[in-house]
Structure formats: structure tokens, C-alpha cells
Length: 447
Image 1 (tube, rainbow, N blue to C red):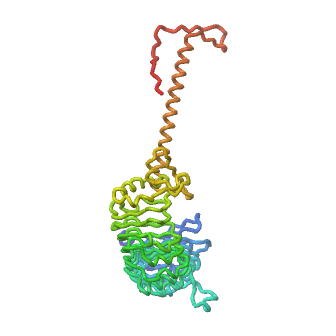
Image 2: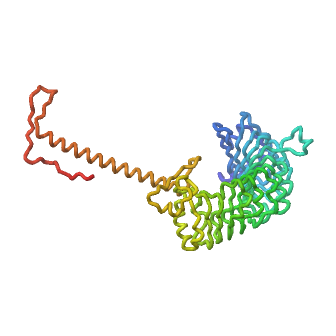
């Protein structure tokens, strides 16, 4: 009977959502509201909502972060006017986004629709229309103030060419873990229409290549993530990314890397290319590489490796390269003649292997400006710290032994002569040493 009543109540709650007007009190009864943070954080995870709030008010004012994950909401209807700046609807089984779904969310900056069931037919240019404005008639379109749109982990094989027409303010677009397989003409137009994009995530989308001139329209692209795809070489299309700072090509079946493949990437700062299990030829010579990650590739499986003519920083972060150079010498000594230190200045131009083999040379560890250390650097710093602690403990122990011994000797010597207590009556108290002191062991002093 109790189970039956619970089921009836649950069904009643779901049905009643069609007519519910959600005010602040109702929202905070159904969900968890944290009003002590800014924006106010509202968590409605797994609360059995089957619709978005088409009628709602928030009387307190201020901005909202709304998390509605794990509710079964197959269709996103137009939201009520709410001061939401961040909206998460992950794992909601969303299949369709209606026209003007987010038009009333005039402050929306972050939209997370990942882990849903969206396909190409699930949304179009009307879905992301922004708030009405006086200029809309002249310009022909309205913009949402969105900066991040996450459509990862959906069912997207392609995207309508006009789907992102109203998302020109977006700086980060996540399309990773969608079965794109290739970027067709329509999808390419859709993605490249976001002219101000700074981060594009296409990881694990089964890509083998990119369309010609795909990146030509981006002026501010700083980060491209192409990890876990099927690229066998660095895409030539990346050469037009003059402002690119970060490139992630992890876990691609790349078989060879030549220095010329990064041509045009003049601003590249961070390159992630780990777990390339098929890599056999690696040419990194003649670049501006200062640090070489130990786990970048499986070094012993490479047939050809050239890391010469780079200004390596000779400190603890590159100390592991001593073993790499020794391995190189056995394979091809001619590719080890120009592996030198580029800094610090006092060891500049010195051969890297001789530097790390010199026992008289210190291996400094300069902490970067952000204060973070990589794993190898942290181990070295920890080892130095623990080594210093051990030395300090030994010195303290020796001092204790010396002071204890000195005190014991002084005490034994003072027993031989009279002791005058100036704070008593002034009479001398004589101490006569026994023939054999009991309980006193003469321990050797070890220094």
C-alpha cells in the first residue's frame, strides 16, 4: 500500500509540472539552494523533473547557477525569464531543443548539454536565438551572451550549417566524444561560423583528417584538442593557426614526426602528444624545446630519434635525459653530437650528457612562475628536502650526545670537591665519593 501511494505521488508530481509556477520557495523546497555563494547555486540533480521551468520567478535577485543533471527531459522548451548565468543539463536524455529555448536567459554564459541524445535533427539556428533587441531588425540576428557550449558525449554525426549562427560570442566549443567520423561541409560551416572561438575540442570524434583551410577563419584560436582520434600525422590545416598556444594530439596512431610538421605554429607553447603507440620516427631537431617530458612516447620503440639543436634547460626536470642519450648512443651516435644545454648561462652550450655525468655539477630545480612542479621535479625536490631533514636530525642527535656527555663529565667532576650552598646557613657540606659509583655507566661518545 505504501509503495502504491509513493508511485501515485510521484506520477502526480510529474504530471503537475505542466502547470507549475516555480517561485523561489518552491524551487528551494524541491532542490538544494546555496544562497551563501555568488552566483546562488541551485542543485536539482535527479529530482524527477520532466520539463524545464517555463514559468518561474526568482524574487531575491542576483545571478544563478542551475544544475539539473540526471532528470529525464527529452525536449528543452523555452525557459522562463531567470537570471541564470550557468546551466547544466547533463544526463537528461535530451533529444530536441525547441526554437528560442534559451531566449529568456539573457545572462546565460555557460551551457552544458553533454551526455545527452542530441543528433543533427535535434536543434537548429532557431534553438539558440538570443534576447530581442532594437538592432535585431537591422542585423537580422540576436546573440546570446554564451561563452561556453558543451555538446560532448551526444549522438552528433553532423551539424546543420546554420546551427551556430547565433553563437558568435562563444569562446569554447566542446564536441568531443561524438561520432562525427569526418567533418563534412555543413559541419565545417557551422563550427567555423563561431569567429571568436578560442578553444575547440574535437577529441574522440573518430577523425582521420580535417577539411582544407578548416582553421583559416579563426582569428583567436588558442587551444585545439584532437586527442584520441585516427590521425597518422599532424594535420597540415593547423599551420594557419598563428595564435595557437596549446595543441593536444594524445593517443593518435601517428607513425612519424618531422620538425617541419609544426610549420606556422609560431605561438605554440604546449604540445601534448603522449601514448602514440605506433610512433617509430620522431624528429624534434632544430626547435625551441626546453623540456622533454619523460612519458611523451615509448622511447625504446623508436627506430629514429633526433632531438638535437634545442635549447634544453639543464636542471632536474631534464635529468632523466641522461639515460635517453645513452640509449641513443647505442642506436645512432651521430644523432647525439648536438644535444646541449641552452640554460642556465653558466652551462650554456655544454653537452647534456657530460653535464649530468659530472658529479661536481649541481642539478638545480627552478620552480616555475605558477609555483607548480611536474612529477619528476617534485620527486627531486622532495628527495632534497628529505635529505636535508635527515642531515638536520643527525646534527641534532650529535649535539644532544655531546651536551649529555659534557653534563655527565661535569657532574662527576663536581662530586670530587666540596659544595657550598650560599642559600643555606653557610655551612660546608662535604661530598665523599664512594669507591665505586653505582648506576653510572661510562658510555663511549660517538661523533
